[in-house]
Image (cartoon, rainbow, N blue to C red; front, side, top):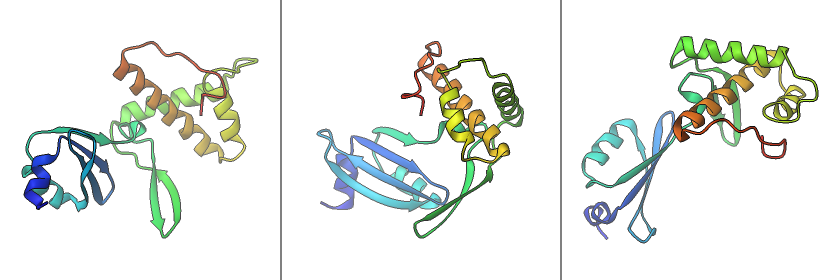
Length: 162
């Protein structure tokens, strides 16, 4: 198939958003992969302009919108997580961090649901400052899911919390 016939056959296009590059996976109506590309930002806009209308799904981290995800440096097979990105809404990020502080300070006795089993596990391996950001990121993801799905928050047992 030529590149133009690849574009014509795409019914669904998946975009994996990266820092410097984007990965595209195109599927036809039957779900067969007809396109697999790695593109830079400038190449992405040019490529999308030449694809006929189709369903586009993007992968993105829900904790990224308030800037609560760590910056990553990768070399070979080693990934180093640095400080949080601090992009996005500063006020909203501050509220999530303050809420995480309150969650860490005011632990209910015998708490076995919600974030507590996860926080206890993370507390054994993370520095204190990172331990504050981790539940803030988790709270941001929960808030996003509640808003996106339109359902009330339902805490789950420890086996499902991670």
